[in-house]
Length: 258
Image (cartoon, rainbow, N blue to C red; front, side):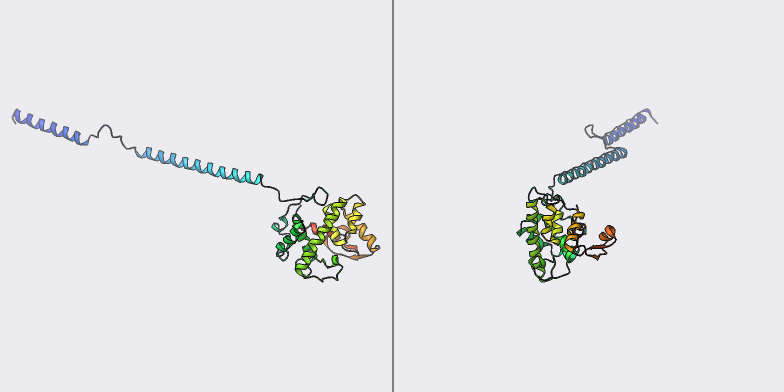
């Protein structure tokens, strides 16, 4: 091969190599694409940021809920500074805790309406507990309030019984307030009559089971009858005086949450 031919071929190869380099070389202003490891790292960082945002969002919601609960106003109330109205039992809780039967709960709106009419809305739960003890929601005279009108037992129908029961309880409350007696005295007086309020006022103004027993003993002349309620069985092996029910306030209170 002649020297001129060899030079010619060498120039051709060099020219082709330079052309190939020009075709494959990327412009200097284009950044190289990240490799697989860099892409995985970015995805991990993105997921980590999303998790952090989610945690912060959940924390903010929890803080808002806690703040709302802390600042929620109390549902208990009172009408004056006397012992009968300063009781701090929570309202509505007897129903949510299942202490009142469905048969009684069915009359809740009616009881609430008549309680409001008598200015004693904060005692709606107490009135429901009284109904629970008096009838369990199963009798016509739901609150057994006929006697407070000096009528024969069971003379009133459902709504009339509730209306009179709420009115009578309001009367006892006002009487107890004037005598500075407590709420349990009012509840027991619903069974005994307003004379029990005077009796408690003369003996310190605060209900006790002992005062309830002594009052019933006086009114019954000491006569007793068997009574197998668990409260009585625990107290005295199962009896009560033959006047009203000396355990009445205890019976009502077991259907309330203090």
